[in-house]
Length: 224
Image (cartoon, rainbow, N blue to C red; front, side):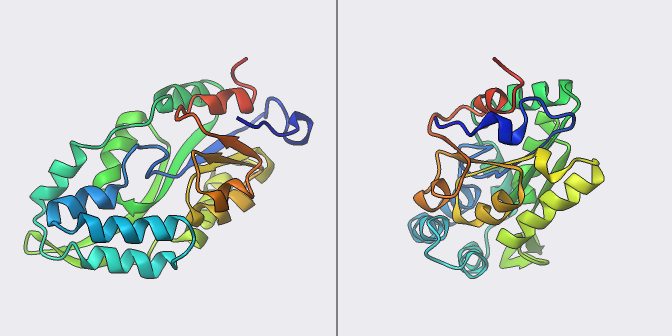
């Protein structure tokens, strides 16, 4: 794990906002892969996901292509997919300690509210933003409902939540692993590449290879 110059970011900010990516960061899964497995299209979807996370595919186009491959999937499959979600080690501790220090924690995801909202509620997250799947007649249509939460939207979310909580951008921390996290990481006062793709690691202030989110606490001065 590589740490930044502590004097540049402040050891103990007076206010703190931590914004986490979801897939392969807050959770161990790629949520769309859980749905693709149920739809019988996992191999195709996972290949597109990997290229998008490496920055080799436009995220919005790749998401729409992947969601198309879920067309016809019953809404019952959403509940089954939720049951397979695994929260990353240290997430609950990170959230609890940041809250105890008066800070806030949000998650912004290129995944889906239908899978993420329950996780966010159980962990006590302050903010959650993700895509929504279009559903008609009890089945997925293969389309996203509303604008796609892409790289730019992730940066917008971080700025909005910082404004809402009166947190200076210098006291915001963005944690992610894929190419679509780079814009919010560029906006944040401190960026953490969490078991991340090379394109993300190259531009982050901090690199974490161990899959334990409680490590973030030491970086922001909330754990010795």
